[in-house]
Image (cartoon, one colour):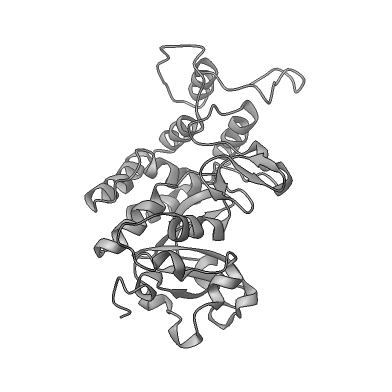
Length: 298
């Protein structure tokens, strides 16, 4: 992308011509109608997903959400795959101002990182993501579950921002930071901030703002085990799995069904499988829709 470090221009936006040059060097090809057009984060992710050969599976993920009447955004599939392949990076908390929205022009530094990850991909990693994506399916849902899950999926692609609770620029720690969420802020946005018509007491169900608080608001006898999870359930993760105490819960997300969930992590708001590290650390779930009397507790 440059003949030397000094001439790299990390903060400049990536242009369509520069992206086309990179894609060509990697064995792909794209047409360029406006050489000086700026490339968005979303477009870069989509191009790299195409290079991996996983674009058809990305499209299948989105179509499954369409068929389930979840109203997904056009980039749901490619962003799901891009984040499973770890093309995105979370900046340190002290540099949250560098986080970009999907529609924003991607900087050359961000593009270089993603391209480097692509170049370092091992065949086993791509195969594992392919296998997982092939198994993506949307579970049957009630109308209320459908509304909550649809809202959660609309934020896929938003960056991870410490203490963030909004998709729009937000004032945090005395300065304006980009829109984005931390893990509990994402659940807070979907369940607490979002207005759902005729939702009754749903907005009052979650009271505490942190993972610790939200996980401890349900008594042990009402905690939901992995096998009993339903779409739209809030799920918590802790160092000791089901034996964790609320003080040990350090992550959370929203269950989609069929072993998939959506959360805000180091890759931003992403859809992924409840396997490996997540399965091992899954502590319990809670059902806000049932707590608000909108679905059956069973």
